[in-house]
Every structure is written in structure tokens, then in C-alpha cells.
Length: 152
Image 1 (cartoon, rainbow, N blue to C red):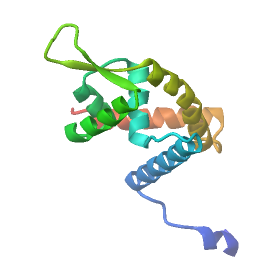
Image 2 (cartoon, rainbow, N blue to C red):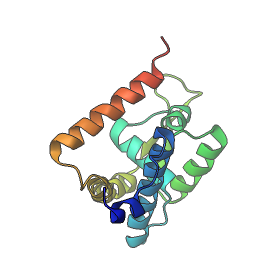
Image 3 (cartoon, one colour):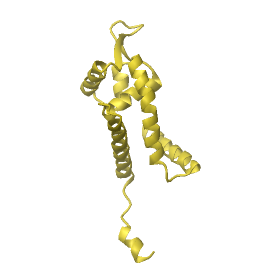
Image 4 (cartoon, rainbow, N blue to C red):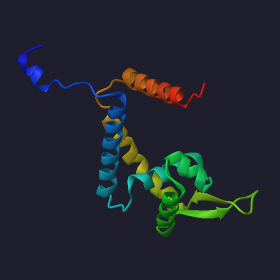
């Protein structure tokens, strides 16, 4: 290793720190995409729209678990997105006491617009990896996630 390389060498970050830094950069890049489109949305609201678009209607508690928010924070986010016309609370078909959260037509249209933003950010995040490396990274992260969720 030459002297020039040593000037830029830093200790390797722990896996937890590295994953946190990657997430923070993805959030920053996605919020920059949202701002460039003049959308008054935060990353958490983007995630809520993404989950509903991909998984369909669900209860507020299911949605909160899927985006890692507590009940109060989820209610505030849902209230804001409902005021903007992107989602609605509908009675559950089988349980009259429960509500299902679903995207409105405006929410679906917005999601179609946001899909390009999401793709751009994720493509940029992986631009230094070839297709094989991208598949390996995805596989490794899935395996880490499964290992962490496995209670055995």
C-alpha cells in the first residue's frame, strides 16, 4: 500500500453502523428526490405509500409494524396523508370495529410517480456493483434479516 492510500484508509465500520449509514443516505437521497418534485412528503410517508401500493389495504397496526412506527406516530402520518388525499380509512369487510387503510386514486397515481424516484435512488446506491454483486448483496441482506428474525 502506498502512502497516498494510507491517507484515505479508515477503520472498517461495524455492520450495524454501516447499515445505519447506508439507510441514512438512502433516506437523504429519497427526500432530495421528493423535494425536487416539489412534493411535501417525508421518507416515512413515502414508505407508507410504498407498503400500501405493494401489499394492498391493511390495518393501521399492520402498517405501523411494517414501517416501524408506534401507534401515535402512525396516526399522525395517516392523518397527514389522508388530508392530502392519498389514502383513506375504510371499514373492514369482516370486522365492523376495524378499519383498513388503502390508497385513493390520487395515492395510486402518486405512487406511480414515486416508483421512478425509488428506482433512481436504489440504482444510484448500487452503481458500483455489477449485476452479480447486486444479487449477492440482496441475498446476503436477506440472510442477515432471516437470521435476526429466527428465534431458534
